[in-house]
Image 1 (cartoon, helix red, strand yellow):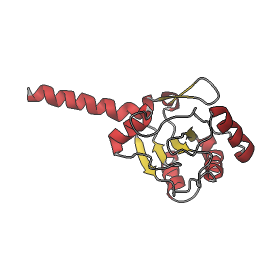
Image 2 (cartoon, helix red, strand yellow; image 1 turned 180 degrees about the vertical axis):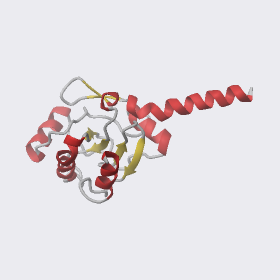
Image 3 (cartoon, rainbow, N blue to C red; image 1 turned 135 degrees about the horizontal axis):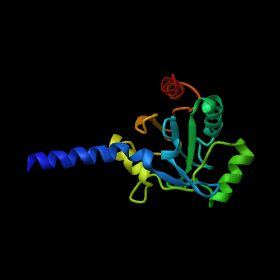
Image 4 (cartoon, one colour; image 1 turned 180 degrees about the horizontal axis):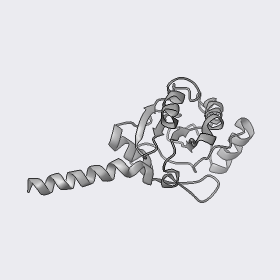
Length: 172
């Protein structure tokens, strides 16, 4: 019985460990963004909001994307209204980001990032690491193997400090 229980736990651990790369987000442009399509590339997933004190970080996210995209980095913005600071629709979010920040990085449709309605990606990250976005502009770096490498809170600026260093380590 112990052997079977151990085997089940081992299989479950492997399933949970692979889960973030299996996530599929609806794209703000229509269609889907499947993280499995990004295998072998680092992906920085950031829950965003348009009416937040950290909204200025869109500039840093775009700069980071511009700096490393040719080397494989994907920066994925995940607009969320979980903290009541997002515009009313995905169309408004997209327009706001294009006009105010000239964003070209990929974005999902509006997505829940915490609680019982959280997207499966965020549930899987929580299961693996215990990390839950506590506010807007929390960052999750997914490595080339699809595993969570690091997480950062809102105060971590995307284009300076620990985040570029972690990305560089993955790209070298």
